[in-house]
Length: 113
Figure 1 (cartoon, rainbow, N blue to C red):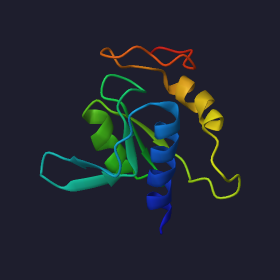
Figure 2 (figure 1 turned 90 degrees about the vertical axis):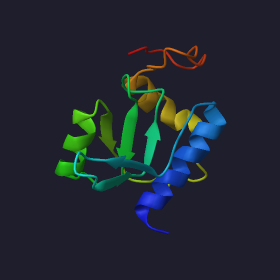
Figure 3 (figure 1 turned 90 degrees about the horizontal axis):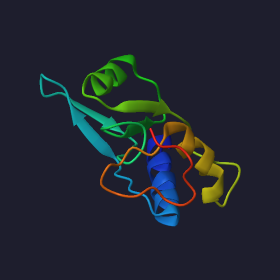
Figure 4 (figure 1 turned 180 degrees about the vertical axis):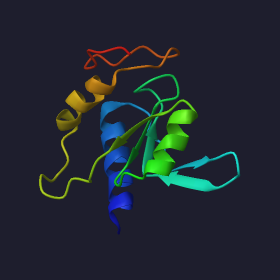
């Protein structure tokens, strides 16, 4: 399994444990129809369109995502502090901020963007 797949699985596990939405892998298309795949999309965090997370920074891909209204973040999958503890991700999620207008924020979330 590559790092992108590990990151997808990690965020799916965290989202299940914290009761948030995670779509992964997430495919975005540019104006020319070229496909750009991100490890995952957290639609309830980071702004109106949500945040896209990838294990590698790719300037062109990130610029396209930002131009379409997404926030972006780069991180590596956790390989050392296993099993994954959702509490380790709450600070990160709070930094991005809850941005869903359709759902109330979870009790553990302290930041609304």
